[in-house]
Each structure stands twice: as structure tokens, then as C-alpha cells.
Image: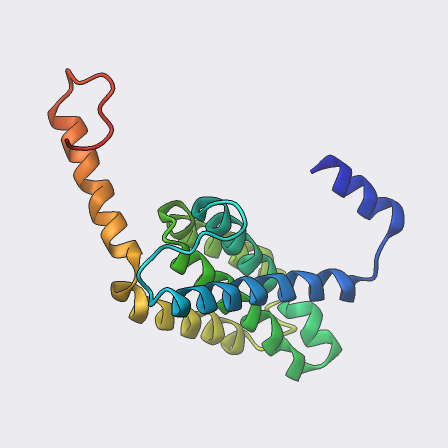
Length: 177
């Protein structure tokens, strides 16, 4: 983190370059995840370059970073404000297709942080557009949620927790036998 932060402070790249890179990264992760899911017939978790967990975590982080660029693009041209939503949708789609429970669990908390961050700009941008666009993406993802591996993984996690609680004498048990 510190080397990247130091580099960005040193070279001061244009804001458009940073926001565009974030949005392209989020959209690319979504496109990659969708292509990989189609190639496997939606039968496997999407791994990404390292493993499904890191791919899911980075994708959800890029999604919300993209969404934070709405005000910047709205200032440039109100029509460009749709770009962060494309990045948001791509990042969340990748997180969902990765099957990473932790990334999905963070979405409500990150939504609250986003609303706190954007509240200072709410008078300057079209509030219904921002909230409606984010809600539309979340509703779309909620509609496809039952068809993803996440539903199974959440049920498995609950079963594992229940098994662990019921078998307190089991020191090293992680999953039911």
C-alpha cells in the first residue's frame, strides 16, 4: 500500500486517469468473470488470477471505488455518470460469480460508507439517479443470486457453524465429516 501511495503522491496522475483505471478494472473483472462462468457453464466458482476469495474481495472493492466516481464524471458531463455504474455492476457481478461469501457480506457496510462519502455532493448531483442506479444494480444481482454458487456457500457456512457449535468438544473440526 505505502509504495503505491508514495508513487501516486509523487507523480500526481490526472484524476481522469485514476477514475478511468478503477472503472476499467471493475468492468474488466465483471467481463472476465462472466466469460469464465459461461465457459464453465456456470458450474464452478470463478477463480481469477489467484483464488476465488481474493478475486471476490478485489472485485467488490473496485465496484465501490467505481461508484465513488459518480460525482467526478457527473461534473465532466452528466451523461458520463453512467460509467461508474457500469464499473459497479461489473465489480459486483465478479464478486457474486466468485462465490466469495465475505465479499458479499461487506456490501451493506460498503453501501453505508458510500452514502456517507457522497452525502456532501447530494445537492450537486441527481440523487435519485445515483440511488436508483445503485438500487437497480443490486436488484439485478439479487435476482440472479439464487442461481449462483453463493446460495449454496451460505447454506454450507451456516451448516458448518451449527455443527461447530453443537460439537464444542471438537477442537479441530471445521466441516461436518
